[in-house]
Length: 345
Image (cartoon, rainbow, N blue to C red):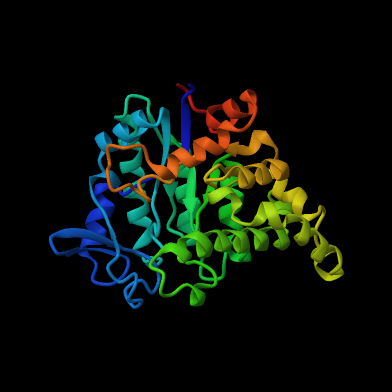
């Protein structure tokens, strides 16, 4: 049995937990019936089947809990990222000092891990100037390997031209961008089924839409060396890449502005292996190649009832990877992440 590097694993640092406890509107942590509950999703309190939120405990912030999870699932190194919704609820004045403080906290958290943690930083996305400065700061923190961002940007998506200075700074400093959903797409269709459809469909459709817009905007021509890592194996992009090619090919107004086909851009990107099924994993490999897939768990979300048992959300990903040839398994489980993120172990 081999060991892994986990590139999709979250933490709520203590400073962030306190911020969430102090809030009176979503996103926030509330106490209900003596238990902490996490309410972070848009409209979560208004929908009867989700208003109770989700349980949250030490597995979201405890280093010891993370180590125990890693040991159980044969994970040698975790690349931690602040879980959604990051700092997107703060304005352009509030977000920059919070981002700087949290990035210092993340660096310290990793430094004290005995070599088992690396991290992605967080940006004050409401403020472009300060985001550029924060990218430079993050590039100097020895355990951070890039940033995690949502799809909101300044409110107009990640293809917003106003964000170009941020993308250029990230490319210049050779940082990875982990694109992760939070808001969902098509959420009007998901009510009545708790969080299941919002997370199973809304999240990956959000990533699909946001990244397709990045591709069609021409951003990857302006920043050809930009490294993007897509959560949840890129949503539906591996399955829809050919359809996107065809639709753009038959739309000269869009096609004339791009140097490549959409699928060629998509093949440049990196994808986590958080897809839970062999067919989905093979679709991502067919699009981007086996050198562009990296193991992930989405811990501490989707926790089991019995915390001392292997997590279904992890074993299903391992089972999908295990159906591949041995050399591909090693690349996805650890080799690609070690190479691309410069991880020493």
